[in-house]
Amino acid sequence: MPADRPYNVLFLCTGNSARSIIAEALINRLGEGRFRGFSAGSHPRGEINPMALRVLDEAGYPTEGLRSKSWDEFARPDSPRMDFVFTVCDSAAGEVCPLWPGQPMTAHWGIEDPAAAEGTDFQRRAAFEAAQRYLRNRVAAFVNLPIGSLDRLSLGAKLQGIGTMDGASAHKPQVA
Image (cartoon, rainbow, N blue to C red; front, side, top):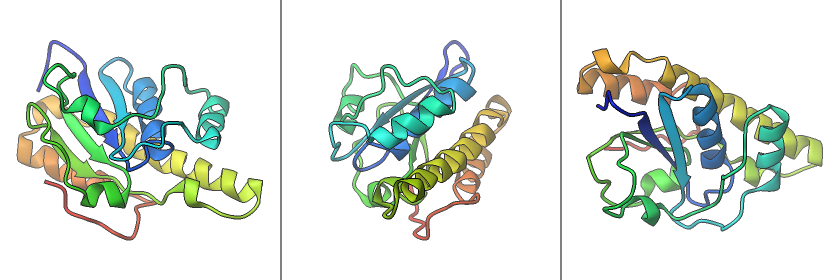
């Protein structure tokens, strides 16, 4: 694991419009320069869900530079080398992912899709706020791990454990 640069962390979701975007913004703030977050999707929507941006803005997280993009951007040889790759939606966890240069550590941190929430604006907003809270708890647990002092097997177990925290989606695929 790098000691000379921030850890690069990629959050994956199928559409890259809500959960993975929220996680990227969270780690870039909560990681305090020790982590650099990215997000992508297997089938990106090409735009960020406006409610995700609103919830991030109102919570004080920076949103400039966030965009919906394909995970292919991160599988190229000239892409930033990822140290960690986390799926945050069940469908992305079940897809065949590209081979990530450098063999990053991976885990599934699935939560329900707030963009799929139905109902009133208040109910939809509550779904996004819940997603942000669940992801914030996971990111906070992750950035506080003693990464440098854990062996790969122990770190992998901790990463998988974070994925089972409150708010975990019902489907729990195994990620290599």
